[in-house]
Amino acid sequence: MSADPNKLAIFVTSPQNMRHVIGLANAAEKAGKKPMVFFTYKSIHLTKDPRFKVLADKCGADNIAICADSYTCEGYDYIADVPAGLSASQMRTQAFHGALLDECGKYIVL
Amino acid sequence: MESLKVYILVANRMYTDGIRSGLGLAVENHYAFPVIMNGEFPSFSTYMSENIAWVKDMEGQVYSCGAPAPDACVDEDGDKLIAEITLEELGEAMRDADFIIPYGLSKQTNEPPPACAE
Amino acid sequence: MKILQVYRSEPNNDVKTLVGILNRDRDADEFNLNVENPDYDMLVSKIFAADKTVCWW
Image (cartoon, rainbow over the protein chains, first blue to last red):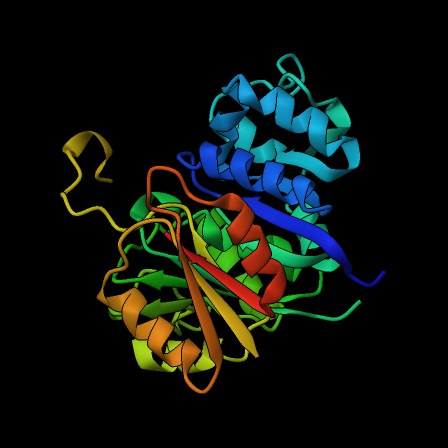
């Protein structure tokens, strides 16, 4: 699969950039682009932000996921406490980050 | 699928998870180069050392930039698993990168308290 | 090669050195996220105009 020139990868590694994640995803959508987002390591705490579900609904199941190992390492239960807006199939591995690199024409880290 | 060259820069002691993230890309057939900046090394558990060795086995490399590579992370022959790179060498190397990922947070300006220093 | 440098905080000397090397002989642009109300529409436009984006801590 070649990268989609209209798709924007947002790789979230920091727990303090939710406003930028939301702002960029909204602006991308406004510009006719499709955001694809992966939260890893300590950024998974952002799943507890009430804005996360709105973001997840906007992105759709194929285009947003979090690192299940990170979620577990930070003390959450990835089976009994799936974040609002996600399903169990969106609790993923770092392979989802690989998918961001492969599928998205543009990429940013936050 | 094209193999991509990815540099992951770790500037903060709490974000050495960037090495695991690099390994995740290596097993997806990309070339991963996690870089520990200014001596912000992880604790070299067996898990961490194995990950660093695995990145190398997958044609990537964990680098130390701005501090000597630690003696605590070696292969079975006693050779250091982490290679040293200067800031200028890193900049030149990253000109060829497909992706550059400043990971997590920037370096803290204060010393960690005993509660989380180790 | 058009490269976009994005800053989430004030860049330190290491970042400035790396950016200087990465931007050499390239069409370089930048965007500062470290403001009260970033213009995300402009950032998206810059990202899609660039070949590569680096977003520093």
